[in-house]
Image (cartoon, rainbow, N blue to C red):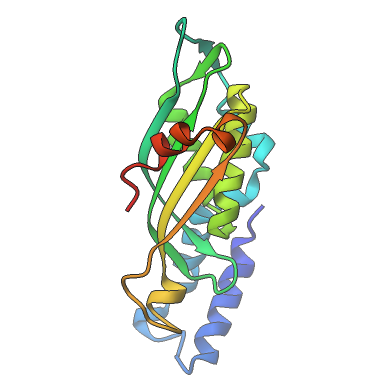
Length: 189
């Protein structure tokens, strides 16, 4: 579990280390606010990929001859584990080929959201989503494409505001089938 009291103490220490007065009016409640925010935006740390898959694995019979299921432009954000910097303007495309069963479409977005609520690398986020989707759907044929902007590149260091990172995770049929890869990669910006 996330220890909000410890976060409050450390944020207060960071404010002091920055040369700020944590007792001034505008900062009095900042440590508690940050602790609450961290508990919310890092909620995914409380769950394993298996836990998330179990939470969202209610399956329904797939229609006969069901083709790939694709959900595009799922908006998420995360925090880079190297700088704890925001990874934002992230768009996730997820697809799977049903293996006789489907899951609710909103479950796919929920999987992406909870997997993103961890200290992450964009590459690992795609891998985590694919792993969770394979378990939740019972299909090994899963593809995940993510495009995102990283504040560790836009707000510091190179300060390249237009740089976007695109990562792809292809499992099962998605590894070999260019048409499936294209189906999920189309429109990625």
